[in-house]
Image (cartoon, rainbow, N blue to C red; front, side, top):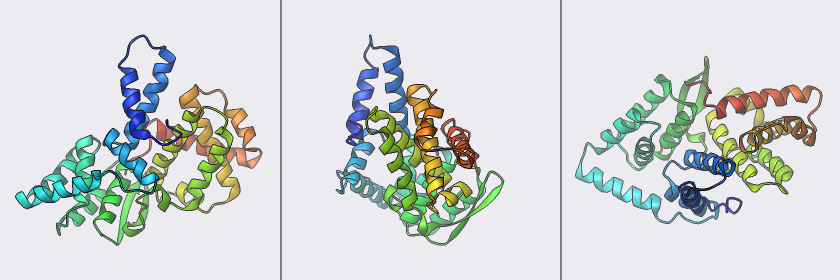
Length: 281
């Protein structure tokens, strides 16, 4: 189910199975882990996931975005203060489902002050890196352009709004090259391992956007891609299977000598992110 990218159905099935009693505890833990990652990837729930499947298939989502756009515009016509309310909600509850939906709705509106408010929030508040990226996406969808300066772990990131990727396909090729390497190594194993690795990787790329790690990766140097692929595989294995295979995985990717240091650095970055320890702005 996951390997064919039927995310919406997967979420519904996992929720059903976790509600049943008498299941093997280890299997329940695996299901719970996968469902947690699906919820991170699709904050709008299974409906959001179904829409993503259509996008991956090259189709329009089943009217979800259009429906949300229409309802948002209708409410704005009924209440001139609706855009300001959405902005307040997005800033007050940024990591909740309501806050994420409000941020998405703001992309459909054109209030003259909203771009400046979002940019100011982005530049001056200590937001989680993933939230920073989602705000950048909202600004781009609103048609905003120009530079913003983000604070991240004591450093300043200079980013251009109009270059923010809106889909996985808009990231530089090196991002997908890492996943291709992991797919090659996990092809004959548990498909949920690659699924988990892919979700972790794309979330990490969004959170790392504009950082030094990101800049080095997108150069596309073969050794760097190998190091990140091995690190990603190892982190996914630890999360899904319980770990203990890091050395075996490094050998499979040819990680030796100086490359081992790069791989360990990448593993540390991924582990920090997956544990929620990535520095805020």
